Image (cartoon, rainbow, N blue to C red; front, top):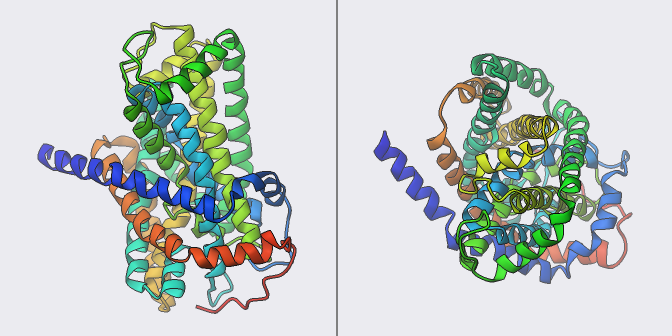
Length: 462
């Protein structure tokens, strides 16, 4: 088993090495330039995200689709992942993580546009879309679409299920002494009660949960930053300076290089916001929207909230806490996060606990939808077989919630990383090869100021 774990870890390190980082970040930069910096439209995008478009085709509101995508995206990576980047790459990793989020908005925009452009309608009236349909209908590459769907279904069990359930159970066990078996049972029941209602049930829960959890966590971070206010200036300067210059060990930080700060900051940012991964477009395809560009803009705000806001706040809290308390151990991500929040007695651990529990639980809900849609795609036009496959998948998914709560997951983390990388490759191929379509749609609706126009295209029946 140790040999297997070592092999999996080596593969994970290889697939998430510099080639993948360069491919993802390169796509972000390329699409940013080709689309004339769509990040500048973030204000308009946020307004659209809270505007209902009831007369348009779709299963859920644009906000519901965004909330579901954010639920799956905002997870333990926004808290522990940022701390791990700081522990391995130094404070400069926070800036690289933030920069990755800014450029990643263009890729998330592109994914959302393709999801709506190439979505289909099932015989029972539901919208179905995502990278698999962009690959099949846009590029005539069904084999790549199948590969994407397979790895999406597998990834849902890893990063979208067991590792999140494990984070919740370990936290509640270590902090409050609650049995991991009890936590696992309750989690499995809650997930069952939500996903049995499909995308509308998941969307309703996420629409209520995501604003609460994000607001609670952001306010908590702002309180801690308020307590550390005299160290904020020094912390910001340290983050900016360390992103571009080597830093020797000392002052609570390990010795780091620019390369280390760049690598770990970019890697954590890419992994956290999922831009380019291909997961969020699956739910974007279900949105009620009159044309692909409206939903593309809404989708891009997911990366803005996830990385540009939440990850940045987490990074500032961690770095300012270390500057204020140099005795904090900076060598382990999870321990670093806990130590930083514990500097605010009673309230700090509560903020961390509520943040991790709600972030992780919402991630499970979002990824359950992604996995089911991947299974439905693999079933094709055999609708009876599809229903059976989804029922089996749901059963296994709920069982995995309980199993993940009570088992050690070091190998599963690495397997999840591999599955995510293998999802990203066909999705990035769709974005780059269909970039001309993305530009054409953007010119038609956004650059020509026709966002309120109906796309006028009939959605094909699957």
